[in-house]
Image 1 (cartoon, one colour):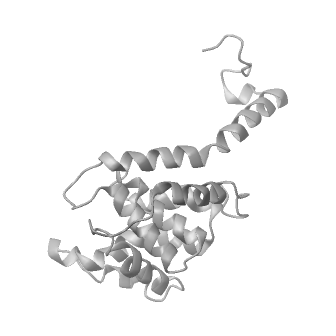
Image 2: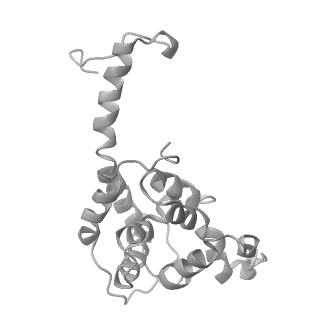
Amino acid sequence: MDVNQQTVKFTQMKEGSFDDYQLLHGFEQGYSKKTAERVLQHLLGLEDSFTGYKISRLEHALQSASRAWRDGAGEEMTVAALLHDLGDTLAPENHGEMAAALLRPYVSEKTYWIVKHHGVFQGYYFFHHLGGDRNARDRYKDHEYYQACADFCENWDQNSFDPDYDSLPLDFFEPMVKRIFDREPFGDHAN
């Protein structure tokens, strides 16, 4: 640790002063402003993630985002398509929830819900091959975003494992990712 770096005076949070928390707040704001850079760096790590598919997880993300963009989905949903499987490496059993939590402060409730639930909707295409219920998604049948999530999976997720698809490069999406993460956090779901 740099001895010249400013630090708080406390060793227990309950002992912290106004000045301590102002100092921390300043550091946290600076760190927060670099979230997009860290997200993009983590996304690059998907290039070497587990295999079995004909393409890498990074290429799947690029294909999903390319399809969304080309369909006119807009930046927010395109970034959601790019990042929807970002949790695969750290939370394979609930990767959608992890990706949704990352996006939640910066995207609409609809986008958050789609990313959070896309795993069970994607299961429509394979759960029955593994002894599961391909219609598990139907527990959300009456939800206002049911069809949007089904469309997300049909149009941009389940079909994005093609080694011959002409994906847009990551640097095409980088400015979009930065704009989404530069947004002021949305009101009631910012934290």
